[in-house]
Length: 119
Length: 107
Image (cartoon, rainbow over all chains, first blue to last red; front, side, top):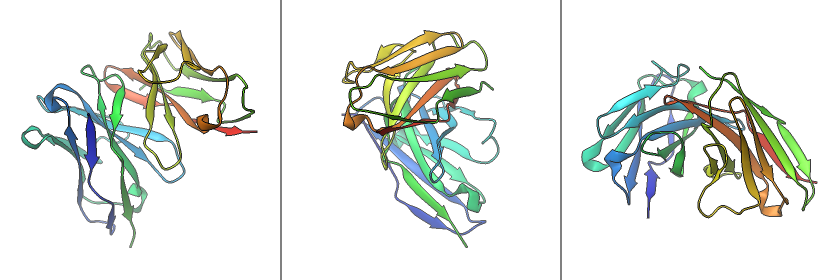
């Protein structure tokens, strides 16, 4: 069974750094793209970026380029989303998703990680 | 980047009704258009991929059509469990964008 298990909820202060994770199992982790999606409270889905763990090829939405870093460690089948300096506006639910081998659509989703940034 | 205009933003319908949601792309995306369902407090779920293909296990009352810039998502007979928000999503060379979402309620 394909599973994506995300790290737990985080409460951080503005200016702090954060790295959240998404561990894949039940499939060949290096053969499918992993994407990240933001959902701010009460709002819609926003695509942030995508990574191919096989060679770490990474693409970002223009809206998130330079704001976050997406990475992956294929040795432990885990993808990451990180911030160097959080803002209150980063408060949101973040989902990872396994996309197809060519990246087009998301076949499976993680349960989400709630990030709260507040002073 | 490609913009997706989804309408309506909300919709109220009765059980058994036919429901239609549209999505328009700002440029030709061929059939690279997918539809997701998101229930409150849950992760999204893929329903339709590449405009008209039903994902495995998804009930046949869900369907999609269209190509180029104009796409339609249809529920042929609305069921109570279909209450959710629906999103279209395009992919163009791995630059992905979602529509704004349609919140579907039971009348």
